[in-house]
Length: 181
Image (tube, rainbow, N blue to C red; front, side, top):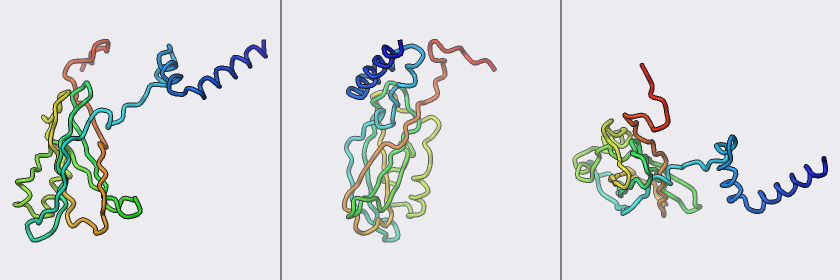
């Protein structure tokens, strides 16, 4: 009996090692242990970035700024409330020399940049979107990010979706009991 169990264990272990993705999918569908093997959903799987442009502008007060604009599209199946975009300015050694993040829906626009001081811009970028902001599935929202006085030596830009939070649903999800107050 011991040798039969040992042979089954070795065979199963070698199968899992040789085909880890298929094994994780198969184990994810089994009862009781399936949730332990579920693939995590990362923000980049929910939001796609399109039409990204960057340009240098002179702000009020004569300071130079790197302005990055683009569109974030909800490619998931649920409404999203918080969608945060992060940007890294990459230096010569392929390391980040400056980092910035901004939420979609914070109402900072390219037209407003000419009227705002750098301090006002930095404050506005840190604001969360309004409570009513939501991105429906397949819908898109613009984003704008500003690096005031960007460091010299930044040759590349790396953008990523750093956070994507689903909107609260007013109705309970099917199969879940309704909460009572």
